[in-house]
View (cartoon, rainbow, N blue to C red):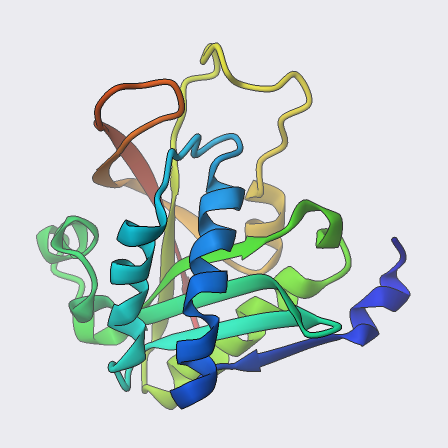
Length: 201
């Protein structure tokens, strides 16, 4: 796969009927991508569809789809921080950072065969443009923290830290969220720490 492929991929914000039509595809993408390290997420379509419905009727939310030959191969979501789960906004309340100044980047998921050709940058560009439209001064997101000794960590595991740093994002020391999901092979949910990153626009 070459970088020429990027020109064949259409990346656009989804609204209305197009958003509704893409929801199951986005849900399937989230399940597939987050199944891999470091999330190890044992997801299900029912939960994902309910979660994604929050983007359907929220004018402050953004759902971006990446399509190759009509197939959804990537997606990125964002929402106003005050509209997202309390587990994610609580750390900022404790730091007295106004939630109304922050756009929260919930996730960007991309099939492995389409990585490394610039689509991540396109997702971030649209997210930051949306933040400016919503008159937000900051964009924040968080990523799961797994122990280096985790038995399911692949030998060739790579983090996205260099990419995020290159885009001007920095981890916020000590600013963590906690969220629970069921890992692959587990019988019940467990709580994981997630590290917040943020950039001032």
